[in-house]
Length: 197
Image (cartoon, rainbow, N blue to C red; front, side, top):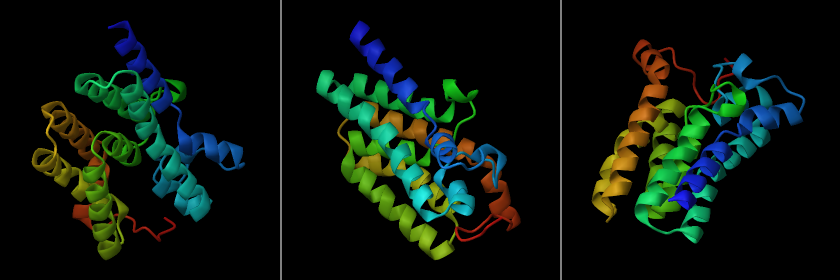
């Protein structure tokens, strides 16, 4: 029990390391929470920090979800512990203790935990996001479609109910965190990927 709790705490603290904020500071750029959409994530960093920095943020945020799951699997491979660790890493990104609980929307970190638990579903989600974002040129729409699709992928492809439930929770939180984007999508004012706004 103590090991499980320790793994969950480590996952939360690791998830709380905001890649966008840290990398922007190291690059001499402003806090991403004060720029563009105000979201400390790769899409917002892309608008004022460029493709290279955005790619670094995207990779780092994905690893924040993936690495705690892989580490927990090495220590304790039970599905219940892995699901709990995955959720804690995801919540750390959304509500980082080190940055006033003002985190990102969770797309990359959510993808990371799913890749760690169910890599075929993770690849399916990447493909879903790429297709939708490439057609619409709207990153948030790709993320939302992938979030809606994720529970269906998990239900179809996963053998573990804990992972299906975890995926549903992550999807609900992702959609909730994107509520302002949803309003903009309906209003036709959502920024496109190549927009500087």
